[in-house]
Amino acid sequence: MFANDSASRALGIELTEVGLGNATARMRVTEQMVNGHDIMHGGYLFLLADTAFACACNSHGPVTVAAGAEITFVASGNLGDHLIAIAEERVRYGRSGIYDVTVCRETDTGQVVLAEFRGRSRTIGQAPNQE
Image (cartoon, helix red, strand yellow):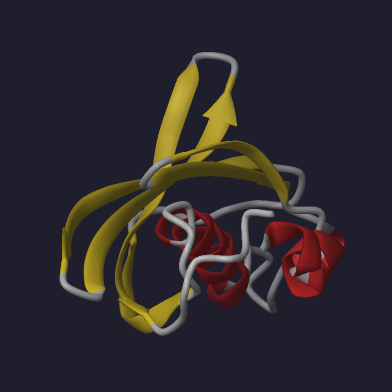
């Protein structure tokens, strides 16, 4: 799925890990992502979290989409920041699921949380043919 995600790849988002129900994505904040307050536009931060969420909820095989999502911004991203989004499955029930994504700035002394994202998924398709 990520290989066909031209929106995420065009922004330089890299998928660095994926497992059943989890995924990690990374991105560097570029000049085009900074708003009029000289901080990262929240839409780009949401997009990074949403990309990790999409990869995590599609890791089980069937086509799965977002049924809804919300984000809480904790701190601002800045030009040049290296960000990491870690998505983890909380629960799957029927064709639905709940996933949490933490977005952090990576620093020399550790990670600083920028946002917490909760996504709700809905499976709409069958697993891809494994032939």
